Length: 431
Image (tube, rainbow, N blue to C red; front, side, top):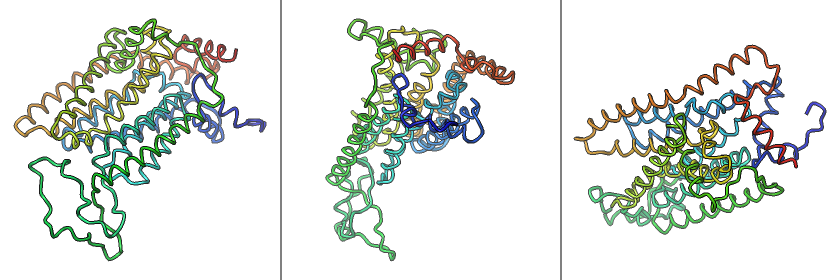
């Protein structure tokens, strides 16, 4: 860049299976602002992490109100900043992981708005695009968006398309419980009133109109996803290092994926316990989804819980993809700290589902359940805190290295063994 020879092709160049265009541009901008330093990059990672926390808190408060909502937001924030992902906190280059997380969270939040407008979709497209060209897992933000659109197809409010919209376009009563059912009087079937400014108040569209709009939004979303995936893959060389043979070792792939999901909770206690935690998380999410599908109010419950189901798709697909792409290194590799940044979103999704369920329990049970929730939260905090000891030590070691002066660039990476592995992967890619 200093000699004016830097090209777009170099910024676009493949990095393992990743396109890291967005992080490259950010890092070049930081250099322009005062020279290279890992702390500057860490600040960028922290900024994306703070944005993710803000959005998650908004989602928690939308799912559950009062004390339960704030407790859930606090527990989710604790998970988001877990020190088990110290590797990504310490190595500024890993900002791509936080960008992808922020993209998936933002997409889930925007596309599950109960009054989704065109600009919600536009901003979600921008977020998914930034994630796509930050790291390989970022492209899965498009899968998050697809699930969000499908789950909210029966519960979105839209602006009336014209002044002639009548109350017959109101949402079908299947969204409401029997106790809340109030049939509109016939006199309301006149055109809706228009304000002095000429604006038409928001209405809830009929099933046919909602289906058409959902189909259009989903088609546009999928079309853009396929286009960006094609651009992403153009000229991409296949990296075979670490790929597992699923047919030859299906159990190993499954254990890897489950350990990946369970790492935020029990990753510090070994692969087996981490896999058990991952299995428990998966069972809990599937059980919640089946309960919603079998409920008489399934549309309302699916719409309410859509952000968390959509968000869980991200770590689930990342776990499956990484198990196939890195499974040859063995299931212990699933406990690498950088993966915790992704898998932690699965536990946040579970917290959101539990908070929404508890907040809507009948009053006689609420006090006891809240007390139980407090006790479980305390136990959970203890487990997470005790599991973060390795990350805490790495952060102290890295801080000491910075204060002593950065003479050897290899010392900026918190795990020398992993650095050697990365260098071997790069050599394989260059051959």
